[in-house]
Length: 89
Image (cartoon, rainbow, N blue to C red; front, side, top):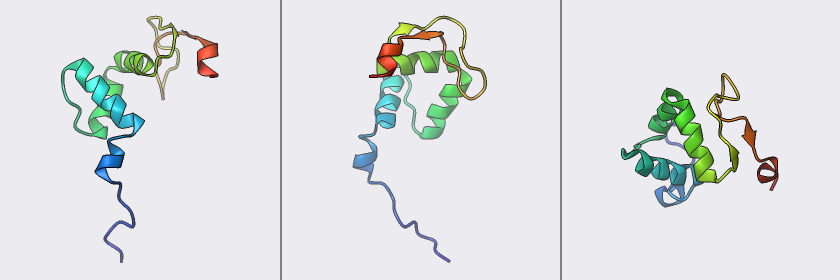
């Protein structure tokens, strides 16, 4: 039985991913470090409107954010009117 993984990411490479950049950005914005993907996920489900608003700011999606979630369940994105032209670039 194999106990060692066939592949692991290099920390330098992982630090350059968009997910890590967003995690660092949202940590600085919130004033508290997110130490793991689990903490980022917890942030996304404990305060979904703020998380999705921050993601829209980070990715520079334009449009009206609104105040109510558009989708319920898997994702809750505040605002019903992202600029369609921005999403298709």
